Image (cartoon, rainbow, N blue to C red; front, top):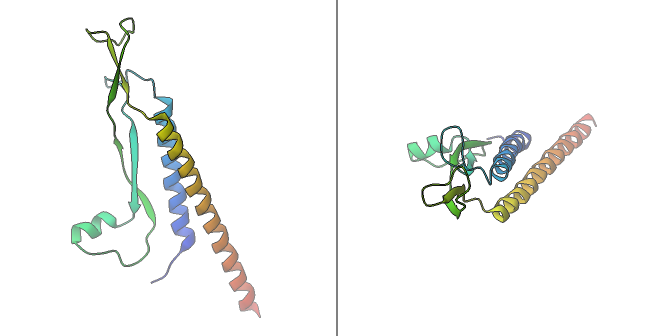
Length: 141
């Protein structure tokens, strides 16, 4: 079993970058009451995990070695909040407008957390490269 910290960190960087994009999309559509398919915007959530996780669960076995990380799915999550605004073009017969139930503070906290995870993976990659270079230097002696 070999561990490739650079490949693991690289895959985690890709996942966290996509998570940042999903969070930004949620924040940008916080007040979107109508999308092309009809209805208000639905907040999205990115679900990630180790590669091979789904297959291991189907086999009923455990994962014995380190794997890279991948996006498993991006799903619409969350409900709607209704605001009384009878003059809004998307108001229903009772004057209520459906907005996505996006927790702005929660999304901002998730964005900060995602940025920290991204930074930590950059650090892991840097340290792995430094260790490799040091090993090469020792091997030259």
